[in-house]
Image (cartoon, rainbow, N blue to C red; front, side, top):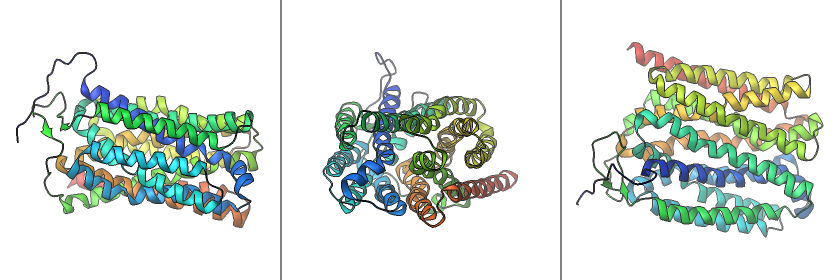
Length: 414
């Protein structure tokens, strides 16, 4: 098969820069959907009937069940078939699911639509980070990943504020947010079709030429994929995601029911986590790129700080301190540390199986997103408070971080 080399003198943006912008917009789209429904649980129940917190939390869990279940299969398909072949059908299913939810008249229909939306979105992670890892120069990978991930924060902010403004403030039907999502998803399908090249493009700083994206890759090294080093990284991501998705799902409800926040203040306060994450992610990932031998130290400090902020959120004696805790959690939490963890995985994984490795990695992380919303809802039903959910999140994060650091120190000393 003939290789096609990429020209180093491309007019305008280089391909890897276009990839960054495209993947950032992809996360914006996904997160507008992910965060749009949770502030609207009361309005949704006005349409479909009254349900318990556990039953409403299951809406998020159903989405993440579909999303998590697709991670490993999608990662394998990306390595075998290529990114575009996996991404476009996945996002078309995502659009259909969002529209289906907008027509739902029962919670069962919303559950089904959520699972389908999760399956559609499940095509994204392995393809996105396989594409970014193989096309972005290694020395720019941390900062570039932070820019890509900032789309999550922007989308989350738009989703939370949009839901509060459009539905709670302006009194429009909750289905309006789903219609907005459908339009955004279809726009991303067009972007994928236009931007993604059919070849696997080597980073600018590398000397390798382009390899056909559809060319079969080597067999995945299972021993490397499930080495102790990688397993502790997967567990670390599980702990990182557990707290984040618990907050994403239940923070609006916690602020309203247990802290007395009302109306638009709920959306804006919840969005603080997202918006404060952007400068944190850009700063720490840039710092990590400049000090690539200190990634483990950065991860340890950020994860422990995030766990402390989760505790401060529920222990805060005033609304002012609570808001400071939310800002710091965003600044130091998942979106700040995730680019460093992803860069760590990219450095440790085999380049021939990036899709599979990132699929397994995200499967472990997103497994927590299936558990956290439903478990926190169940705790709330039984105790009348969501505080215990925050405590559990902090403990899981600390334990996972300690295991990760101990394993990497042993490897370093070996």
